[in-house]
Image (tube, rainbow, N blue to C red):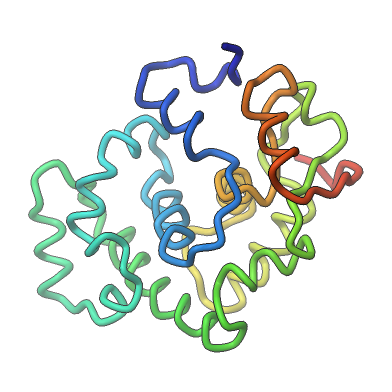
Length: 200
């Protein structure tokens, strides 16, 4: 079975690739989990983040943004003292702050998913050439979304991080065309073909 080369590190990465990466996400709790995993990943490998995923879920009430929005200093200390946790106060505080801002987007748009998928009219984007392996770290759309999120006060969500989230949540299908997931996704979900967009 053919797969994207980046996931061939270990079974944990393969499982994430096969079951989650690029599958369209319309559930806000899952959106928040993916976004905050990207926050925690900053400066680290994605494999470390996947390895610690259950620790994150335990620390952050399974990424329940409404509960996290009410966290205070005691919760920050609890998380910092959790065995195996990434001990970055700034990242933990960013997750809490982002949860409160996430709530505001939900109030404005009905859901965070409606906000995010509004950028592609609800369709999975297929950028020309990406299926051949020419995948960027960021592009014009991720710049646009990151700029809006920054204006709203979100932290640790620059253009590169936002593009990674677009890939993970299925807004963009960046599987290699020979990967078994590529065809499966484009036959199951509405897609739109687009030209490359200010790629970096």
